Amino acid sequence: MSIPGSGPQPVADRLREVISPILWTLGLELVDVVCVGKGPRSVVRVLIDKSGGISIADCEQAHKALGPALDVADPFPHASTLEVSSPGLDRPFKRSQDYQRAIGKEVSLKLRQPFDGQWRITGQLVHVDEQAVVLEVGAMRTPQTVRLNRDMIAEAKLIVKI
Figure (cartoon, helix red, strand yellow):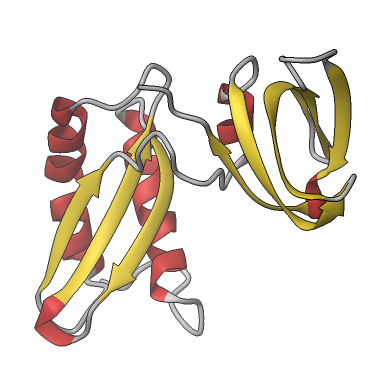
């Protein structure tokens, strides 16, 4: 059996089409699919998330559900290894849901061009939509609200405090 829509589409994109609905039925979200290695050393890394965070049991449940589906979809002409994990707290935001989950929390934005002479801005994420993010910056001094177009952001991450 081939993966739906197989053809010139990259393997990771075809795998997303197979994996995402399975994870959805388990109450999990697909964050990313990364294929690394070649030949029998190929590894399919599936990064998952859910509101409240991922547990080892969630990873195990997803692995058990995805393994047989990937065997049927047969993305490679050889054996491969499936890894399922959380993407980590300090991962770069990839999806709108990542930004939404971070509202009210401190984030760090790496910019494509300087804003007020700075390449990196840190602050509390106040609002996000498809076009822009709004941060409250300068907690030590007088806080100010900064609105940045999303296309100005090279990378956004949650600031993890231990």
